[in-house]
Image (tube, rainbow, N blue to C red):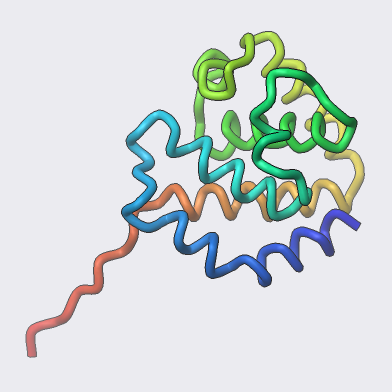
Length: 137
């Protein structure tokens, strides 16, 4: 189910996702990673940004979305648990717990495939925009 949601969200929001990789969001800035990841997670899980950013755990679907976002920051952006904790205003042990929960869910093939697609999307969006080079003729 999550895989089909991920595919639909990716195709439906491809224009928005491409805008995220534009110069308006600088990945060198601390919040850049978070903005990219939150946008991808919001599209796939259908969770509003406010719910992702709130200090409380919230409903189960919100907690899963936030845990996935932290996992993507750790794995997809190669940030340490401490860096992810700082980014999401959580303790590093909370991030470690979130990553362990997401890893456990990867036993489900559908969830694993959806997460694989999310990881690819985050990695692709992290890349600087490719400059169009014109070959001299």
